[in-house]
Image 1 (spheres, helix red, strand yellow):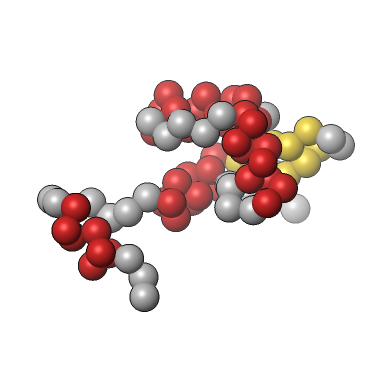
Image 2 (image 1 turned 180 degrees about the horizontal axis):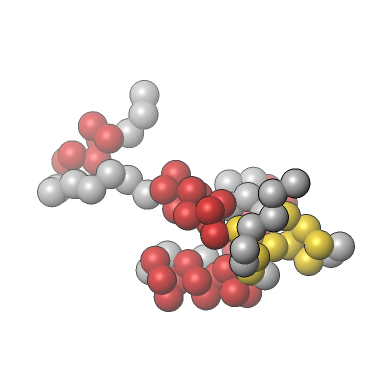
Length: 80
């Protein structure tokens, strides 16, 4: 099993997403996404969910659009 260098708990992951990337996802939102799906991948150490940097960054890539000059370009960026 490949164990990453630094795992963050849910509070730390929430702070990281906002402070480093400007994406506001609260602890509660990350908790809900862990239940319903759509959030970043995570591991668990007993009852504690832990987020790996690579998984967080991959999730951010998945939820953000490509760089565009105008909103009219966004429809061309969406997958069919």
